[in-house]
Image (cartoon, rainbow, N blue to C red; front, side, top):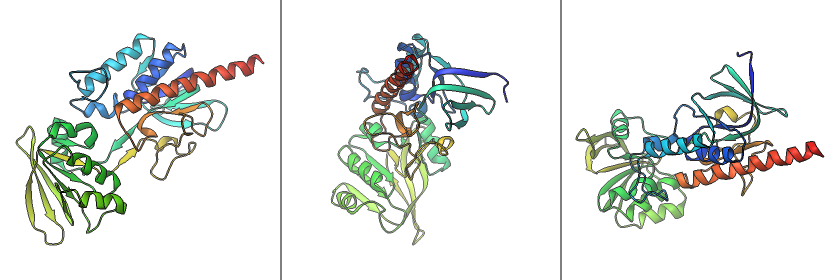
Length: 320
C-alpha cells in the first residue's frame, strides 16, 4: 500500500456522460475534482458507433468522439482526469476512504459515483464480433432502433424490458422477431399482451440463439435452435438486439451503500444523495429505467451541485 494518502475535495469514480458532466460542474465550482476513468474510459458509449439523439449534434456524432469532447471540456476547467479504477472503499467514518488500483489511498470530502451499468450479452463469439464491429448488434433499442427503420430485426429476452424494447422497435421496423428461451414470458401480463397484440412482432418460444450471421461487416441473419425439437433455422435480419438485462457496476460499494435487489444504488428521490452523507450517485449506476446519455449527463450535473451544496453547508457549520 502507498505510504502517501492523497486528500481530495471531490472524487468522481467513473467516466461517461455522468462522470464527465459532474467533473465539468465540479471544476467550475472550484471543487478541484479528480476523476478516475475506470476499466472502460468513456463508458458504454465508447461501444456505440453513432449517437443521433443527444441534443446539440444535428449531424450526429460517434460515441467515442463525444466522450473525447466531454473529457476535453472537463479538462478545460481544471478537472484532473486519471487512468485507474477503484478497488476498495470505506464509507464507515467521517472521512470517505477510497483505494485506487489496490495501492493509492485517497481521503475524500465528497464522492460522486458514476460507474454505470454493463449490458448483459449472450457471450457468443459471433455476437461479440458484430458488436465490436458496430455492424448490427445492440443492447439498446431506444439508442439504435432508428438505424433499422423498415428493416427486419431479432430481439432476445423475455422480461418487461425486452417487451418494451420489442414494442418500441415494432414502430420503426418492418418485422420484429422475439426469441424467448422458455415456453412463457417473465414479463408482466400487461407487457406480454402488448407484444402479443402487435401485428409485426413474431414471438418464438423455446428458442435460443445459435449464431449471429453476417457478411464479415454487418449482420444478415440469426441462426436459432428450438430447444424442444433441436431444429435449427436461420432468420433474415439486419439487427440483433439483446434485452436480457444490465448489471450495475456497484459491487465495490455494496458494504456501505443501499442497493436494490439487482444492485442499483438507491438515491433519495429527486436528488443524487445516497444513504451516506457526502456520497452521491449519477448515471446508470442508479438509473435502471431510462439509461440514456442525456439523462446520465443530467444526473451528473445534479451530483456535482449536490456535492457543492454539501460542502458549503459543512463550511457554514465549521464557521458557526
